[in-house]
Amino acid sequence: MSGLTSSKHNTKTEPKIGKKKLYIQSYGCQMNFSDSEVVASILKKEGYSTTKNSSEADLILLNTCSIREKAEQTVRKRIKDFKKNKEKNSNVIIGVLGCMAERLKSKFIEEEKLVDLIIGPDAYRDLPKLINETMDGRKAVNVILSKEETYEDINPVRLNSNGVTAFVSIMRGCDNMCSFCVVPFTRGRERSRNPKSILQEIDQLNKTGYKEITLLGQNVDSYLWFGGGPKKDFLKTPIEQITEKLDFADLLNTIAQEYPKIRIRFSTSNPQDMKDKVLETIALHRNICNYIHLPVQSGSSKILKLMNRGHTREWYLDRIKSIKKHIPSCGISSDFITGFCDETEQDHQLTLSLMEIVKYNFSYMFYYSERPNTFAQRQLSDNIPEKVKKRRLQEIIDLQQKHSLFRNQLNIGKTHEVLIEGISKKSNKHFYGRTTDNTVVVFAKRKFSIGDFVDVEIKKCTSATLIGEIV
Image (cartoon, rainbow, N blue to C red; front, side):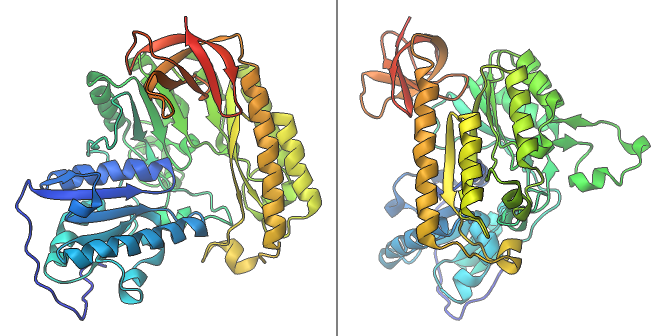
């Protein structure tokens, strides 16, 4: 719903067009950061320019994440900080976007009275109208999920851009219904973006000098274009009515052929949906990076079933084997959730043993945080003590650091093509970039510039970074 009324009515004067300032802060996954660029584009047409200084903003937006409780706590604290801006300038509008907005809906306004504006991930086109409602002294909410919205006609404003790398969203939503995850409830059903609009966006990036793109989706391997709408509708569509059908491998192949000088990454993949056709496509094209993020969450088939992951330990290891067969030098990363419901010490040891088999380049690791309204919260018991969760997590982190160092040490003495993405945070005399397998490399500047591809010989490493010299 929109136009939720408040008992307090303040008349606000709208800043002059072209003079309005937008401060937007993003949390969570890459999709949220990509969505913020869509929001900035929509509001640019309304006269808003972006600022990095929240104290000078007329509109403050937080694009939020609900994947873990800690993420929500961080956002709540940040909102309270921004309330101080409102004490100094009552005209400041504070809004919450994204997954947390979708999950909590009007609670922020009705119960906690923290913000003026609540917008879910599928309602960003409605922002100008809702902002006007707040200027009339009302509170505004729109968290309606869409089965069609992909923002395919919006050219994102590249926020904090290095002019070299960019995100390109290819689909939205998720149909997987993992028992621990809120994403299907906050982002809705899977629907894929028109491939023509994807190519148009990439073409614009190519013309303006971008050298690398990352194709984004909650589950990119589920990309399926057949004219629009949720993927489940494809199964109900008579075959004679399908005029065009494009899966993820087809899309990758088309982009790689059309733009051979652009380096291509993608995120995120789901094990049960990753087909050999995708791996064959990666192996076929030099400009598709040899890197796959393949979340496993647990090494125990019992826990994977409780998580409703749709794959077993054996299936996952078969996918790893297939990746190594088609792309021997492929970098692989993963996600782990430890301390899930009913996880025994044996289940935990199965996770550690799977890590020993794969030896990931790096991973994202967390202990289980119960999320409201998920199947796990409603039907399972969060019965692992926090002390045990933290101990198991630390064991996973320690093992991953060991494996990351092992993987990086294998690169010493080798030469890699690296895209220069920026200046090192630790030294302005050094550049940083990434190899095709997504490992960060730091090296002395010399005569090159950001956006150049250079060959770098690796001299030494840490568990997180390769250190080398341009050859």
